[in-house]
Amino acid sequence: MPAVSIITIYYNTPEELLKLFDSMQKYLDPSLYEFIVADNNSESNLSAKLSSIKYIRFNENLGFGKACNRAAGEATAPILFFINPDSELIHNCLPPMLTAMKDFAVAGPQVINSDRSLQLSFGPFLSISAEAKQRFLTKHERDVWVQRWIARKTAGPFYPDYVSGCALMIRTSVFQQLHGFDEDFFLYNEDVDLCARAHQAGHKIAYVPSAQLVHHRNRSVQKEPNRVKVEYRRSQILYYRKHLSKLSLLGLRLYLTIKFVLQWSMLRVIWGR
Image 1: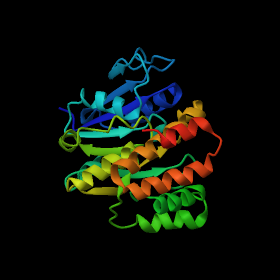
Image 2: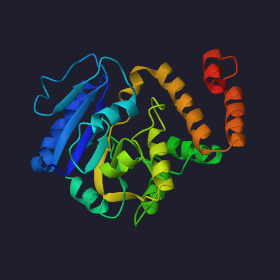
Image 3: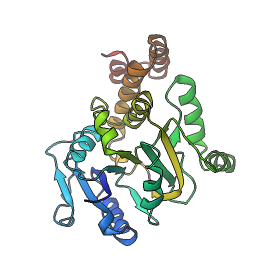
Image 4: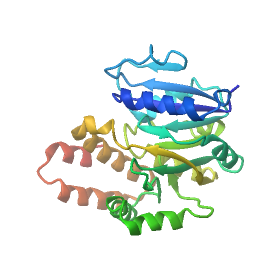
């Protein structure tokens, strides 16, 4: 039995996925892991090129969370490691991650941008104020002061509210206990929701700076920008409805109504049930 089931959700990023696979073959001990790709009905079927792995192809785009859950159902390892297809390994990140998993239920590595700057791959649970701060930091992520802030924040033991789903490791037993990702989230915030439910169940989350990988960020979502904007707001509304007060949800809806006034498709998302 492998120690880790590495799961990637693939949607129209063939070059990136193959590059990720090449980096896994370069740096990882093949006896340590199995690789599962869930293909959300991509234009390029890579099953022939990835014949040595578990390749699951769906006849429609199930979204991130639902595809992850289907892939996790095929996993055989006691640890699941969800990695975005536009990621790339730069060393064997599994040993320090597995060491962390002895004490924690969920863990995330240090994620690096394409230019090797530190990526903001963690954050606080969502609220209007927390999201405003996170957006500001993300906007200035490559600025020296934010890079220094991330480095200081993560220099010692660090236990954020959530780690990004671009590279998220979780015990299979905990994933099953939580019934996986909430499939009502099509895209965005399903990682924050999963970590929130893990916290509520008494589990701990760790950031592991000694494990690193590169995330080339947003390669697949750039292909459908309009849908991505809608799904982001749909997921944001859903998270607030699940985890925050009715007053917070109302405040978010009023803010978004002002932001997207006269954009009727977005307003239907904001005020829909």
